[in-house]
Image 1: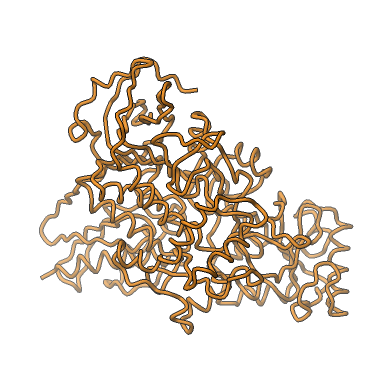
Image 2: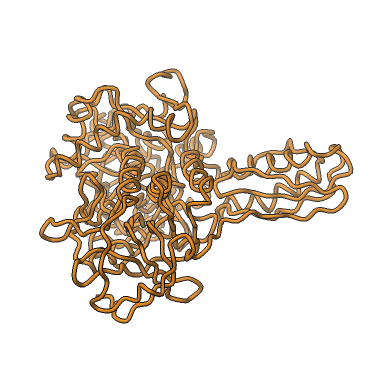
Amino acid sequence: MFDNSNLKWDATYDVVVLGFGGAGASAARFAADNGAKVLITDSAPEGHEGGNTRYAGQVISTGANLDDLRKYYQDLAFPLSYDKDLMETYIQGLYRIPDYLENYLGVKPFIMRDHPESPVSKALHFMAHEYPEFRGQATHDLVAMHEGVADSALWKNLRQQVLDRADKIDVLYSTPAEHLIQSPTTKAIVGVQIKRDGKDLNVRAKNGVVMATGGFENNPQMVETYLGETSLNPIGSLYNKGIGVKMASEVGAKLYNMDNYEAYGIFHGLTPKPAKGQRSQFLPFDWPAFHQGSLIVVGDDGTRYFDENEIHRHGHINNHGNWRILLAPRHPYVVFDQKKYDELTSDKNAPYPEFMDSVVKADDIESLAEVMNVDVAKLTGTIKDFNHFADVQRDYAYNRDPETLTAFDNGPYYALAMVQGLLNTQGGPVHTSKAEVVDGDDVVIPHLYAIGELGSLMGRQYNGGSNLAENLIFGKIAGENAAKAKDEIKVDEPKLDAESSASVHESGLGSDVVDEHYETKDNQYIGKSTAGMGNEIVVRVTADSKDDIQNIEVLKQSESDDYGLKAVKELPKEIVAKNSVNVDTVSGASASSKAIKEAVANALNQVK
């Protein structure tokens, strides 16, 4: 329990929002629109805030028929129990998502049912109806900010909504929350302790604290405790470490959904195993060639454990009539032969160009088993059985489509190490339809709200886009409710030094969001772009004319440390060398490459 005796306040706000992701950004924006002075804090450094919303596919669930939506989400939740009022609030919000995007985010939404011939709509048709067996699925749909996915478009809009309200919202990066501050007499949440530059600061919240800190994907201890897994690898933000679960527990909040998570990737959530500490690749589309032919997936003992051709459902697989997330092997592998290797390496539909770089070749099964650290007899038997299934055109183990079965040749063999990708956890404090957190007796803890993936209402099954919709719907609800003026909470037991707090508009902590000025000399021009996966990219271009580019300096960028950073380093040199922005995109970094070229072009347009 956090010791709040002899507490002094370092600042006072109407509302404090913990977490600057999609849910937190929405809450802060609507709290500000309802007259509140707001502080947002996030543990990530600038350019890496955004939580999982930044890394998500940017598609949002909706539906054209309210009754269908009710039936579909009831079936998705089954057999778990759920709060009827909470679910109905969510369903009503789903129905209005297109209007939400237009009215509050200022975009004409791309509704996939209205564009059936679009390549995006066709590619994501399976996700629009992820459970076609369930009632009401026919009118369930997906909406995006434009005809595109996996480009942070929704996140960038939500972030800009916050920046546009800089007079009302202070933002602090690299400032994690540590403890909620609770009145010992009323049990109301009256503030929060945060850590800034190594110093603990106590921030008073007059009207409410909104927890939007995401899940616990990057907390191995929590993953092991609540999910029972030891080998899951995060796909989204690397800053979701479960602090919201810890803080909620300290103030007596009731928890739920703690063993519920979503996976993503090829097959049922597998992605090529990355270097330690790196995010797994987000793979928005499946790769047809990787699901058929002389190719299998094996677990830790060298045996198959699912139908490799089954439709992707965020890691869920039918287990004797129930859709459940698979138990995650510690070292799964994809295994294939020479003819499949030749096909895959020449297939232009690979999820990203470097997908096959980690493939290991073995001349025979014995060598392959050694590479994979599996029993050679079991691996030999697995391949022998699969070859028999291919010969008789019937998979007696997992009933894979006969048309996808092709027998293995007698070596060489290839193996690609995989890992179960952890998209997000769903567990956290229970909250009401007003986003109010409740305690173990289902009594509301005053002034405390939780939204997003921290205590999501998503049940046993999950349809893509549902969490992003939840962020928007309950972000708005939490922001509006937190902004409402509350009865003054007496904080005199123990003595909380409210007298040290000045008026709310005079005692803020300032903001990391500031206007930036970049110096230029003769023939130098500043160019900017927000087309990347990070925040703004700023370049300084030295050019005597548009056809004479002498130098490009990247003054600001926050692209990812893998492919994005490669584009940041390489593209400026190539543009200077070719004296043109018409250079090839860096493999695996299309968004970052686009942003660099756009920023340089922006600077060159200023050349007289």
